Length: 283
Image 1 (cartoon, rainbow, N blue to C red):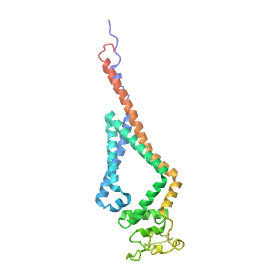
Image 2: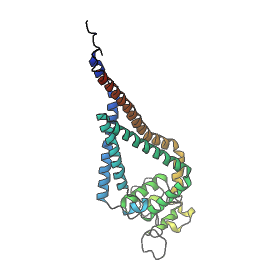
Image 3: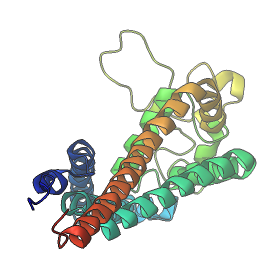
Image 4: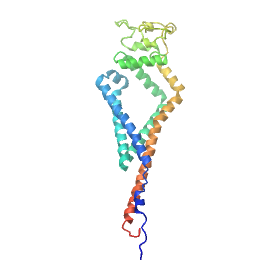
């Protein structure tokens, strides 16, 4: 009796549920953020080694350089799981990547909701950070440049008003203050002068001694907290776009990893099925 022709064995073995498109798309997706994480760590380490961060610690309670390193390391480990998991088709690493990314997304979502619900407390925290930054204005050049940029950008001065600069030891209005900047405000508080070739860094001299009406002729008298809140309210679509831009890569990573995990599981089932029927001569 002639044997029944065997079905092409190669077709079952060559066929794969794992899509190369999904596999390598996830790999290069993670590779991109893997490189970004290494850059973050390098920048954080460089910033920590090259400068002292006492002023930043006093203002933010967390050294930005250390925060950058920690976030970079966590991002490195997470994307490492995604890279190796997709390349080696490892379900354990892919599940770890997916679960961690889901946790990060949910934490960000919870932080946004809590910030919206407890907006008054968030405003108070921002006010505290700004006041601490004012106190340490002269202690750190980067912090000083950041405050000057913010005051010029938002056309404001101080936290609530220009008189908040009295909290700084150099700008304090007390009689026993020997500083030449006593009762003054930084030059970034000054109203812009058209066609000014040289910046007058002493334009805020003695401005805290004047009332609002007189001081408003030379410097900004409104504080930066209200200006910042107004800017946020007027740019909600922009902030929403930024939040969406951060959320989409995370959701894409979660979706691709879960698709690949399911494909790998189907491929394993197919291989087990082939092994079980390989001994059958009529298969």
